[in-house]
Length: 176
Image 1 (cartoon, helix red, strand yellow):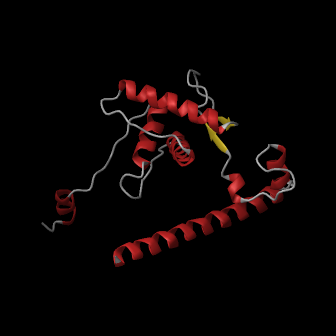
Image 2: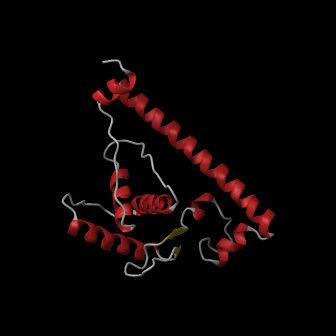
Image 3: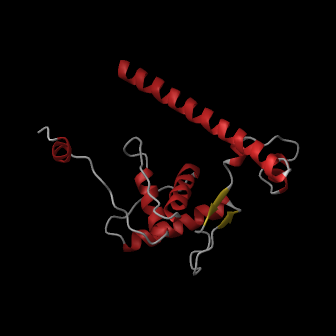
């Protein structure tokens, strides 16, 4: 029982720390937009429809802005552009998932909810960069590996996975 309480406290502190970092990053971006472009981020986000009229822009509004090259599946070359409709994005991800499952020997059964869409989009953005690599850290079964596999499939890339095994540790540290 103590382990569950400690795990809950650790996850609560980690979430608060992550939230604090996101808020600080948003504050930096908020000030940089005005310093460089002489326009307030509130005005830009309101004009683009991400912030309702009269509300102040926050990190939660900015989290709804998505960019990617997956909105036109048959385009050649694929165009990296803003995603205007998250429901349409979910439909496109379902399409890519069906395409992956049709050719894969290990099909995935994923539910495309908001958090999953966010992860697939992030993975795709990192993989598009030159020498783009990802280190996925988290609880086993949380879907990060599946999101990466789907993003790699969308970009027509292969996934190489490094495992941690005891014999690998023994070879590296010479402590068998």
